[in-house]
Length: 153
Image 1 (cartoon, rainbow, N blue to C red):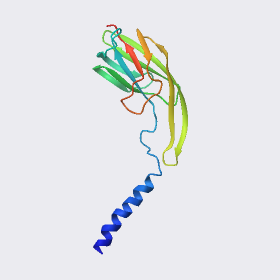
Image 2 (cartoon, rainbow, N blue to C red):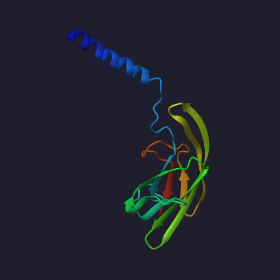
Image 3 (tube, one colour):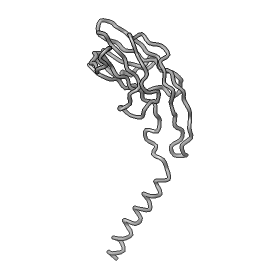
């Protein structure tokens, strides 16, 4: 009897695990994360910039608060085709950037529902000295790099 249990338990576990492979993973199925790298003009080196806050206009959440950072990661609103971000630096210096993109809705499964696929990132408006798109495809995590913002100061 002990031999049968030793054999059946792993076999049943493998069958259950294999059946779960038919369903896609429902975690992080949307690619709605944009990364902003902060750079020094001319040298193109990373630059540490102090922000009092970085936030999305119309939302109360702060993504950076009273920190020196070399990059900023922002979730994009996949229920819209644009997101506006506000960057506040010491001395009441406020910059904004509005990012536009295409959104496609894709049905994944009964369990997962829909996913939102964003593409074609572009800068619609900004108040920075200079900004450029380095990748027009948002990511799913904090490793994404989409924009370079250049700071003279």
